[in-house]
Image (tube, rainbow, N blue to C red; front, side):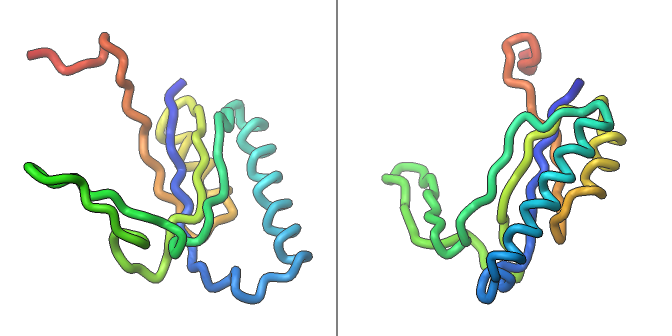
Length: 123
């Protein structure tokens, strides 16, 4: 089984006037998504919701200088990274089918890179 990161991108506007009932409904949908992943024979290995992008800091590495720390996200977009899942699935096809079930506006699916010595590039 391979691992895939599901990066969840949505407009942050929905937080502005969110009622408790709407929050509960959103969490219910994510619970149903997790159940669908398990039913498909895959696994949710982890995941979390993230605070708004306005709470972010960016650390930029600079050659020959100290890293630069700035407030906020690196780029400005209409949609922000709002959460993530790490999914273990048979293959990319299954991961994409599961992403279609995820209750998020946009889901970027990216394979998790193996960093074990046996998978290191040969010189």
